[in-house]
Amino acid sequence: MEHPDDLSVAPLAAALGERPFRTYPALLSTEAEALAWARAGAPGGAVVAAGYQASPRGRAGLEWHAPPAESLAFSLVLRPRLPAPREGWLYVVASLGLADVLDAHVRWPDESVRDDARAGAVAVTTSLGPFGVDWAVVNVLVAAAPPPRAPRLVAIVRSIEERLGEPSALALADYLRRCDTIGDRVRARLIPMGPGGVVLEGRAATVKTDGALVVETADERRLAILPQSLGLLEAV
Image (tube, rainbow, N blue to C red; front, side, top):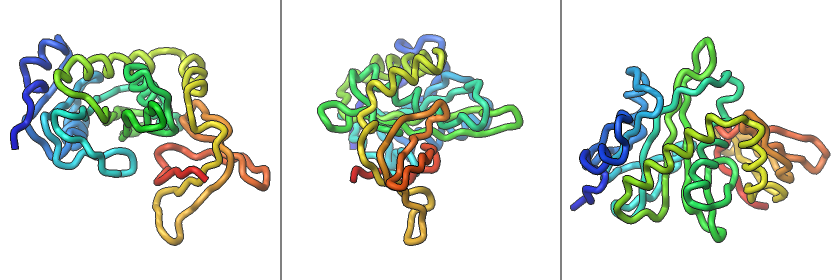
């Protein structure tokens, strides 16, 4: 199989400048490489790209369909200053940063949507230490991204970093304004999913600064669902 070379060293170096990056003609997933690099001390802002990924993965291990030369999938290392209880906030800033570039709305917790179709998605893996989030790896998918893809990759990386750096109140207000999930009736299946798994149902009321979706149930309870605890969210 031939893979496009628009994510090879030369075009990425030209687009990324001094930003550290690794790129490969083909990988199992950029996430696996980025996780290993982050554990070994990769700086915040480091990028892992590949012309082809055999098994790109999204939130909760869900497989992404990312055809080479037709889509864009890559991973970004972050070293945010976040307390551990707020790790889910990274889903808000990552999905919002992606939506900014794609001129899209968001669907909690991980999708950018345009014309009711998924335009992109994110997934976040974090490592927690004694002082909060040590590092995070953000996986990014753009469903339709023909070459040249390096400029689009750089725009998304910068957008996510800008959203991470702005005051939480401003980012959250923009997120809520653009979130198609708010007001819908939803059914959330929590991890681990299965016959005995926890299922919550109600109206999506708001999103908090820890990234949690607040659901109002039929018995007037307000339950917070963290994005890292979600297996599947369905419309009711």
